[in-house]
Amino acid sequence: MRIPETPPPFPKLTQDIAQRGRFDVLIETQRDHLKAQKYYHWDDLKYRTAPGGLTREEWWASLKFQRITTRRSVPLRDKGGILFSFGTPDLVTELLHQIDRNGGTLIQLPEPVTNPSERDRYVVRSLMEEAITSSQLEGAATTREVAKKMLAEGRAPRDRSERMILNNYVTMRRITELKGEALTPELVLNVHRLVSENALDVADGAGRLRRADERIDVADTDGQVLHDPPPAEELSQRLQAMCDFANAKTPDYFIHPMIRGIILHFWLAYDHPFVDGNGRTARALFYWQMLHAGYWLFEFVSISQILRKAPVQYGTSFLQTETDDNDLTYFILHQAEVIRKALKELHDYVERKSRETRTCMRLLGGFADLNHRQQALLTHAVRHPGFIYHIAGHMSRHGIVYDTARLDLLDLAKRGLLAQRKTGRALGFIAPANLEQRLGKAG
Image (cartoon, rainbow, N blue to C red):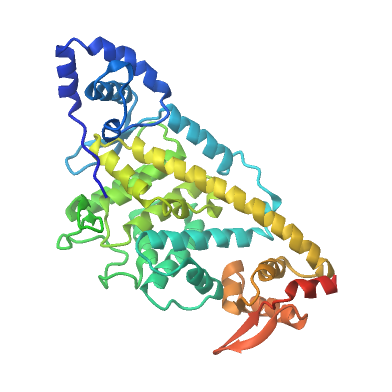
């Protein structure tokens, strides 16, 4: 990954421009940047033509002048003790508005998501997707299909990659239960333990801060160091400061919940307090923050599936922040756009599944007495002939006890809608290739 070029020091830049008698030009030009369509970094300007005959340095000074006057500090400090800060240009404000409308505050979703009897499968789908793609971002090599099958069947993981995914899945389920609690250092450590148990090179690394003798940095595949986190001796104090920020104890002004969640994500990733699993923990805490703030729809949203499509942009937004005077706006804009895309993906998915469900419900006309779990399973089975359902997987998918899951599946087998057979020591229930015809005959 290429590290963005660090901008020239702003005070020296403005001094040089003033000495050339060009300062008035900057004051006039900076007004045009209020409605900018992109939040350019100094490194971006080398590929673009400056407006109004400005030099690259003058253009940058004009941009910085406008940004500095509107940025606000947060309690996160870099290793030199300098605070991070962020701005809210029109680009950020517009994204906040879109997310507020589509993220659980003013939202009107199709009935399947809001119906308590059907929402389980939408929640589980999202938890699975986030667990898989978040782990893949951190190096898990298992394919999405194999991972989903493992989670759906409820089988034990076979290797470290599958263990990472299962841990993430368990963690995401736990986050939905913790949303009403305040964030504490103990809770953060517990989240890390859930994420990383039996999935670290350091055997005792789960659920504790890294020690002074555990030297770590963030590097790319070529070994280039991209980020050198703060020393271990500061981590306990920094973790408490992060929790105070997450709980809105600091700073002394209002921060939009989404911006607070994004900064929380950045904060943990910047401090890198653990020997491994920092990225997964950071994303889990972002979900905690959004659910804690009342954005209930994030229970159904997967941001990592969007991040995985463009991982370089994810890393670049970190580096742009660090190289430009700790300006968090770069990371906020990137993450807000990721959230917007993830919400759109959810809406598209729900719309598609609603159509499929309506089609399947017509086929299920002859089985009006089936419960919503059985209906959901058959909706899936029609589209996945040969899929093997297990009692453990049915339990996990719907959050039910063993006997309830067993009775659901045995009933479907008794009706001739699933084929029952032993698969190893477990009882398997197979979706027949002609399931749609069987449903049609009954209807």
